[in-house]
Length: 421
Image 1: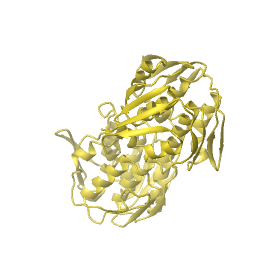
Image 2: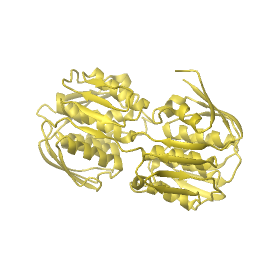
Image 3: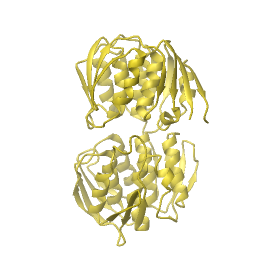
Image 4: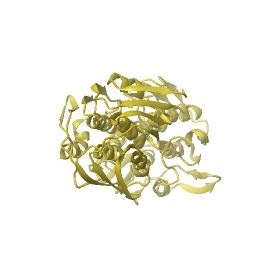
């Protein structure tokens, strides 16, 4: 594993262009399995999670051209195995999205537990229940599941037990390959779910209600190939904006849609971070942020849970006390307790709530990445801190942020990668 050495305490400046949405890239890659025709994806993020998912497809028999480039062509002419590589599946949670397309192509899949952030705390029960509604038989295997649909997937009318993003995407992917009309209620509405629906529409699947809680899918036995350009990653854009805010920098982030950034910019503006949002991008200017009473994550279009760690770092630089409540996921806030050793004033109430009092002058120290977003948050804290910090296991952060060291240096950050690749 690599360590990122950071010398903090200095403002940054410059422009960052975000790549395609990570959370859209993974389901779109999975959707390529639905057809034997070539699919071309543009503006693909060059991150580790995408790399792993493409390698899984290659080992299933797919041909991938442009691996590691912004433009990737995936051709799944023949799927030669019903068991995705267990080791690779254990590295990325997005691998769970392969289940529906593999059942459509093979009628059976032996699936190991998917990995990613906090795999033991993030179950796939919603995904399995959705697949059962489409006629899939499920049995437990050694450390995983065997899923079978020997007669093919059947159209269904289902209510999801939670508005899970990947659970919704799993249901939509299965419905796309189930001839007839399916209806999915209590569906997630996030922009990347809508983008998956757009891509499937380009593959010939009829979809109504994308972006609402009820999605109707007119499935096909075999969709056609398609070409699609991914929208910019609004979570990445928000991350860089917070990096600019905590370091009192002038920083412009380009490439994400303004409508996708509104829930993030709303919170920044409430904290009196001076910023401008228009079609040219999101610009953050040096500011003196203030605390706001409460920040709560929510389903779209609420404040995204993926940015709760970063907004906690910003709260350490804001005057006053802020309660941050992430009701969606446990453990993300636990990783931020490390900032107490940086002189941050934090009180962790429980796995979902943290009280932050600021502003505090942070001091550099050794930090440990636990997941993609908290890892990026600790890098932001290190950039704002006086002195030198070392962030361990930077590969975890690179699962979601491409060319991390190169881009930090382009903004004037003093960073160095030590060890590893």
